[in-house]
Image 1: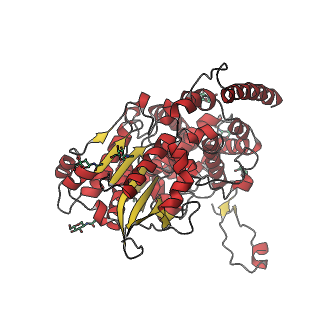
Image 2: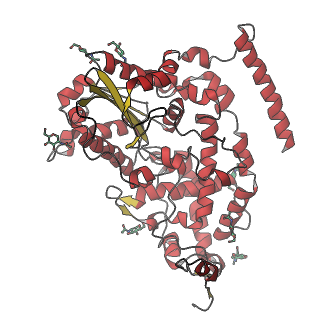
Image 3: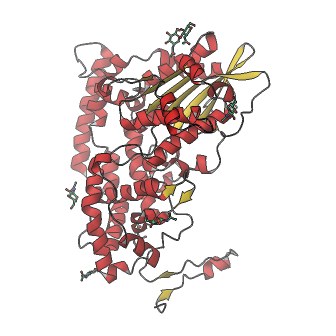
Length: 503
Ligand SMILES: *[C@@H]1O[C@H](CO)[C@@H](O)[C@H](O)[C@H]1NC(C)=O
Ligand SMILES: *[C@@H]1O[C@H](CO)[C@@H](O)[C@H](O)[C@H]1NC(C)=O
Ligand SMILES: *[C@@H]1O[C@H](CO)[C@@H](O)[C@H](O)[C@H]1NC(C)=O
Ligand SMILES: *[C@@H]1O[C@H](CO)[C@@H](O)[C@H](O)[C@H]1NC(C)=O
Ligand SMILES: *[C@@H]1O[C@H](CO)[C@@H](O)[C@H](O)[C@H]1NC(C)=O
Ligand SMILES: *[C@@H]1O[C@H](CO)[C@@H](O)[C@H](O)[C@H]1NC(C)=O
Ligand SMILES: *[C@@H]1O[C@H](CO)[C@@H](O)[C@H](O)[C@H]1NC(C)=O
């Protein structure tokens, strides 16, 4: 049975004077996933919070804050994406229809199953559909825990603001979330992390949290957290349009080879299409976060997500990029409107900071819980994670260190907050991205003057005119700027037609 093991040639490596690790792989076999101590877990926006480098590399929370003497924290403004959730009902339906067929195909044919190591094959053979479409998009246990843990960590870091009684909370906190189950449950779980005392029962905690007013606007009219649904011009000109660079990448050599490889590993006679391969990737990512991460994400069980074993590291990197590409164009620097539409949120943030630094009476803790398309445009409003070169279909290989990497900046439960400090008569602030203290663009230090913040984004907040920005259709008979815009759209359409006929 071991007769046809192939040894990786080690001589060139030895010649470099390096220690040689032979990952001995049987001919035709792919690397063993279930016994890999460090599998690639960067699943872009479907990454689990506990797996991202900012978190695995240690957080700055969960210990007391260190700042200059004479300064004390007075206000926190915190934006979060909801915690881990089930895939959408339609995704779960696809899993349940396709994956059992793939599993049986792998198990029945030894030419196919021999590609997998014993552990991977056993996990695939034992795999059964576990998700029900009726649970689609709901917050999962991992998601509840993520929220609770983030709240706990900040509570330890800022006890004067966050380790307070329910009465203080009712008097000086403001919670707002979008109108979905996953954001409501996330906001509540965050509040629980702030309020939980040793010995408190779940019922007692639940009763306390239910007393906290949570502001919710209907999905159709939530400009603060769902500007992407409220901005007509954005919807008509950007969101509903295909992302040309993504189509190009999907039809290019890299993705074609990835799909051919995955299809061959599963033993399909014909290559699957991109949407089926995307489902397979989503099954890998979500099953790992939902069933593989247990006990506060400390126990990591690869076997609970066996579909990951049909991907090799390079496949996963290509899938990661395929998510980042549309994010760049639809929610970030790719189009000005894609991020400027988040200005109501910027206004809320700047208004809160301004009140905290100029008034005696202000909301001390502001919690906003939204979605991935809420937080990513907000980052761009602040100038965060801006690459010098745009993300395109052709530069995947040179963008390995891109800043706009959703696996790092926008996993489930991604979050950004600002803490305002009073230092005598002056005010300073600190920014945390995914709990890690991060230097704000334009500041010399993580602990920075409030004026630097105001000078950099205060004006954008004050001049935010959402109605004007989002007006659609643009009336060609009105002012010059609008006319120019109309002409631009016309030329863009011509250009798009030209591109389509060129490929
Ligand atoms: C919160 O404050 C109480 C005392 O008021 C203290 O016993 C507890 O350890 C604090 N909890 C945290 C997480 O700082
Ligand atoms: C596809 O599989 C071949 C053969 O195993 C391998 O050499 C190649 O690197 C794979 N390509 C990708 C993009 O994973
Ligand atoms: C098993 O899979 C291989 C490779 O995909 C294929 O060539 C062969 O026809 C399959 N055998 C059966 C019995 O389905
Ligand atoms: C991809 O393949 C699946 C399964 O064969 C099929 O149901 C689906 O319609 C295809 N999707 C596209 C976009 O072609
Ligand atoms: C890992 O997951 C597999 C599949 O769900 C399960 O059978 C096994 O008991 C789990 N192992 C641990 C240590 O939880
Ligand atoms: C700032 O304070 C004013 C006056 O109290 C209040 O109307 C406004 O809503 C506050 N802004 C924010 C963003 O909290
Ligand atoms: C300001 O003070 C009044 C009266 O004490 C209180 O009702 C109100 O909620 C406070 N406003 C804020 C934003 O804290």
